[in-house]
Length: 311
Image (cartoon, rainbow, N blue to C red; front, side):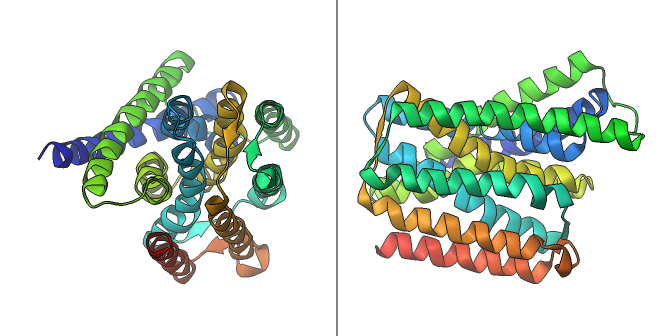
């Protein structure tokens, strides 16, 4: 009964926090004269990636590297296959060209670098530092580029919904709500899964990853319903970048992470889904992720989860 209560409480907190994170993020975009896409890729992604950060660092420090790595990889897979799939199934997602030209390449670069770094069985401290510095550079460049483009094009953005201080407060409080909500949900789901005798790796790439990805799901669904589609797509791509460059970067900086060989198939899934995402976003496909493509993502996710549990 306690695990079920945690599941319900976590879900409610995630939904409400996701709503206010979108509101605060949109208002910040208006205040700082940057696009919703950039806010989605940076501020909103940072907020929704907070649960992964808490879980990964805690797992690494307490001697559970499988959970730390599995959480990030599984979260990235969930973001693309499950969350984008569900959102596209509900409402086709328009794709901003900047997502294809700038954000996706950075996400793919982070994924490929991660794959190359772990081939020796470790994510070293210097590699973690390189990842984290890359994140700082990406965020800074994204904000500067957006401000310059808006100024050059003389884009007239709608007025901000809230003053800057209140926008920041909404983002901060809702991010904390996402962390607490995800923690409650993961505790409940993990408790149920452990009773069923599921392995630590399987739990980390499915149950824990899904739980820490629920903020992205809540935020993306809310953004789609509010027609803030740039936040929806930007949040997913940005979250994947934060998970690799930020979370694994910080975690490996604190403590080098041992990588088990059974992680490689999951990384290959992550890389494959990244390529599939690009194909679905390309302009010649009308610049939308359509409902049937969302269904393809969901089928891929179901196959992935099935293979994890029979592996």
